[in-house]
Image (cartoon, rainbow, N blue to C red; front, top):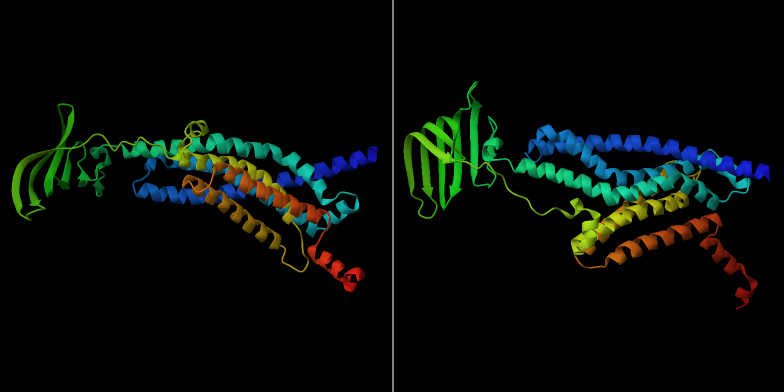
Length: 377
């Protein structure tokens, strides 16, 4: 009896240690790759003026934190498939099978290892994902709310907050708030104007910001009649906004889970179903990983991993597709959560049972054909 207990403890501890090492290594590689991709993308957004260049690290950190549920789900799946495939390749599975441990016996140590991560994925999808998206959206909105003067950078054409003006300033004058070689193009009240001057300064009059231009000219064109008027000035003032565009509505991904539940509109239900499905998918992937892992000596060693990644992409894309269908009102949220994930769970369990019993439809067909009673019929 003691030997049997020792054998089971050795079996459980060995599987969990292998899974732990594989999971940590997979997470390190995946986080490194995703960080590199997000860094390049965030720098591109900063260069296009969508993100404050000084807040690139914050945006990147929140983005990675939001991706963690998906990364952990994929890492659990890859670690399960990778560990079991290695054990098949090194003939360790033969040893465990010969000691009385069937394929179903691996389910207990895998779940024992993975349940804290599955719980973490579920909580992060429900709580951390919307919080991280809200922080990113807030950073971008605060950057977009800059006034016209805050947007202007020397040597760059910059559009105003309302999109009606384009500013260009050649360079800053050292030691002064003035600018040199100022150009403004604007379209207002069916009139297009282009104003240029040698220099300018900023003044505050009645709590409003004005850009005072010196020694320049202004070309004004009537868009309806195409008449134009050219004038020169010694000093010309134009009001500039100190407020940016206001954003009131948050995207569904940035709304808390409780608010999604309180406001059951289609787009919110689709987002809610996606968050719940991620946690269920993390569990389903463990069953799929246990069922799909095998080693065919005639095939390449990476064949099971390729099939696994293909299954992961199909399942994950189905979750996103169901989210879009729920948001469009084509299906119900219960179909999204129970229908998709329930079908995947049932298929994975049947597949695992078939492999555990070493059952084959091909062999069943051969038995039926060779049955003498069937022949006589």
